[in-house]
Amino acid sequence: MLERITLRLAAVIALVATLALGGCGYNDIQSRDEQTKSAWSEVINQYQRRADLIPNLVNTVKGYAAQERDVLTAVTEARSRVGQVQVNPSDPASLKQFEDAQRGMGSALSRLLVVAENYPQLKSDANFRDLQAQLEGTENRITVARKRYIEAIQQYNTLVRQFPVNLTAMVFSYQVKPQFTVENEAAIAKPPTVEFGAPAPTPAK
Image (cartoon, rainbow, N blue to C red; front, top):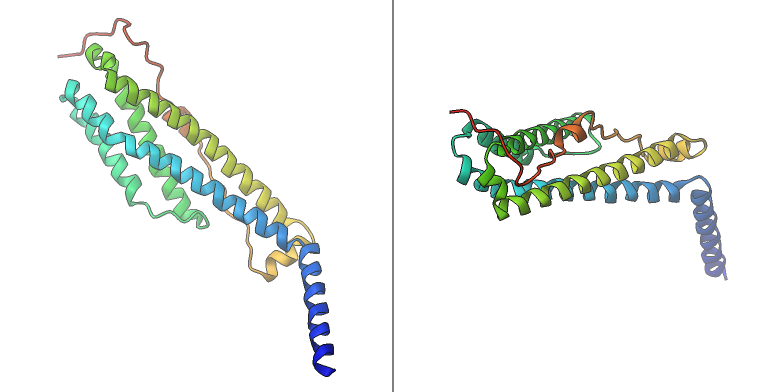
């Protein structure tokens, strides 16, 4: 008899605890936190997609413009720096380092594509055209992924600041997450529009 009462009491306590946690926002915090993780994974996936295009892009340009060593080296080094960053999105310093590396990658790519304007044969190369199209598509995906992540962080941070959810967040050590900032990266990273087949300036000798 005592055992049955104990089991029922435990069940009631568990039920009350579940309702209390739900009512104080614990489940909402879990949901928002998972959304930020999922959104961040997509950001990483799209940046990795861009990085994976770099070797083929560099080799294609090198085949027509090997003399552009500085630009080719800059892209390769920027990709290497991106690969060396061990990013923790919950650490502001780590996130800033990641942002800077990706911004540098976008800037180097932009310079590479500008250089390609001076080489009509390169611009007309089918492989280069395909790589550029993939790069443009990837930049668009990066923009969308970043936007979704920024929105997910905003929703999470708003939730954990609200009363009484902020009390629950404090108890379970859920803190405000640092926001992802892009500053001028979107403008830097966006590949220039290339009109294939249009007259191009003669490269300097």
